[in-house]
Length: 95
Image (cartoon, rainbow, N blue to C red; front, side, top):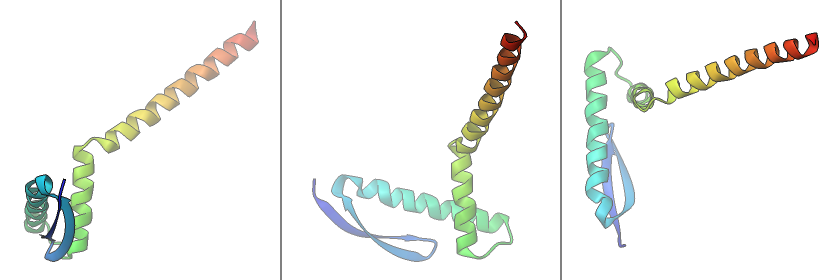
């Protein structure tokens, strides 16, 4: 596996990277995808600060992956288990 030095541009900033030769195309496509999404956000909102746009994109991508939903579901399960445990404790102490 040979390393390749490349440069990708994201939000008008150049980032030098070392990647495996077989990953070069994927990395370049990922950078292009990020830039496309940033441009879409830029045209949809009055926000012009690139850092704000990157933060908004990070939030969108996280939501697309379902990470927020997973946390909410876990919290709800913990609440339900706590309630069941409390009811069981009450029932056992009444006997």
